[in-house]
Amino acid sequence: METTIPAPVALTASAIKEIQRLMSAPGFDNTQVLRVGVKGGGCSGLSYMLGFDRADAADDHFSIEGIPCVMNKSHGIYLAGMEIDWQDGLNNRGFTFRNPNASKTCGCGTSFAV
Image (cartoon, rainbow, N blue to C red; front, top):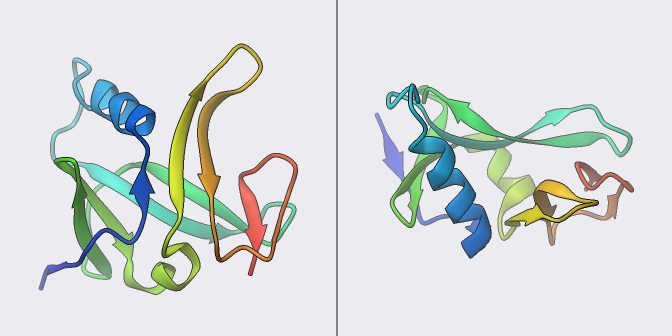
């Protein structure tokens, strides 16, 4: 059964624009949704996951500005309140994560500890 929840994370305007650009690219698989999550590893213990994937039974479903998103139900405790941004500068290009639940983050900004 699909569970729809209020969005546990926020996307900045620049992140929304970049995700919409990726989703509108020729050949994008429209059966996939944006997956937000964590995985073990990285220099601080957990790493962020952000990418396109198919939903599965262990996911909560939510939408941000019309972008269909999923997150494994068990990841919410780590990610609730997180903001995802898109940086497009000369020295820093990519998605960045601001997580109020992180007790420690690494210099690369893609891993954290709770």
